[in-house]
Image 1 (cartoon, one colour):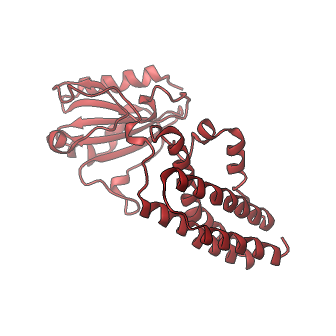
Image 2 (cartoon, one colour):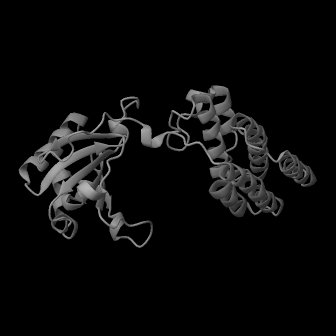
Image 3 (cartoon, rainbow, N blue to C red):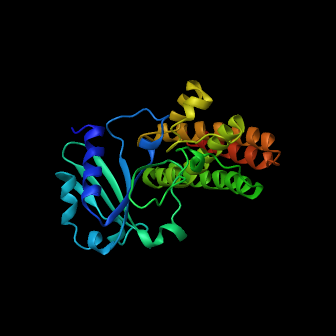
Length: 284
């Protein structure tokens, strides 16, 4: 596997030899000094280019980076979101390295381009980024919710949790898990992030998929969160839902108090009790 230094050297050699590439930026986790590096980190790289069509129409040129296992061209796909201005290459190489490359046209840099807060300039041929600040997690810090967002999150969690109950009662595991993981869990994780925010004065990031939960809320709480994940076993899914409901009930009240938001304790108690009753009714 090529080292980080070798990948950086290769990228800089490509940029220096091609006059159409005017700058190269590194962003993402590799620009974050507080992230413990590992071999699975992507190289999130931005090329500021002239004649972007030269790079986006013919894809053969990307083989200069190495032998590919697989690539994805998200801006040519009908699934997902396309960028209107940039063009991306997501590349996984046979040596295990991965480069997520974004091409951005130079003529749009000044009016529209705002670098991510986790950005390091590796090369700037034209002085496009003279005052780039030191990389920070500013763009990723947990945001203080508005009252409406807090209220909606609570209601969405409890309302859709009844869908999970329905699926489990019918022994429809795929439906129950879909409701749990695509709707209920995002509300759950959002509430956890706000709890961290109240502890850190909203000055820290949550991390991808709650990566920093144990850091800010402790290992015991993290283990309780892990207990909300279940396999396809019916009993385990009832237990996971019960675990999640118990945590969310406590968290929503705690966060509401710290943010001085009113909390609908009646909704919490009634729905939480409904989940318990349904679980008992189905003898799980």
